Image (cartoon, rainbow, N blue to C red):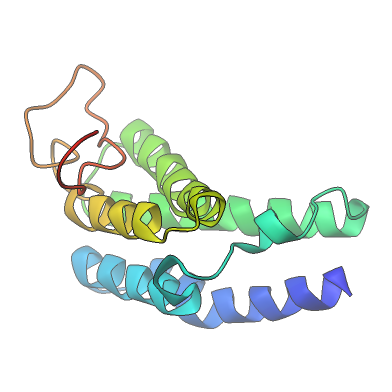
Length: 155
């Protein structure tokens, strides 16, 4: 059953995410399209990520598929950043952080019973993933965008 769920998720990712990340066109438009797809799929943070509700320990086939999907997501976000003119090391770092922001915020949203963390991270990615400083603010030493920078109010 877990493999069937993963296959459906993989098919959705192929159509709605990978084809866009790995495609051609304006990087900012591609980013917006991918973020909108994630928002729609996860009901604006109201739906849990698969990794939160399905144990990765579900067997070697499930673990291998999860790993492959995560690696491809990172590679896709890296490609997007490179297409925007980012240096390779920064592109890899931002790609990994994008995946952590998306998936981690879904877990946090589920735990809190509040979709706000997911929505905040979507906005942070939208505003900062492709920007020179990473978030439109003064650059930190690392130059990385800060998760949650799209959030208003407290920390």
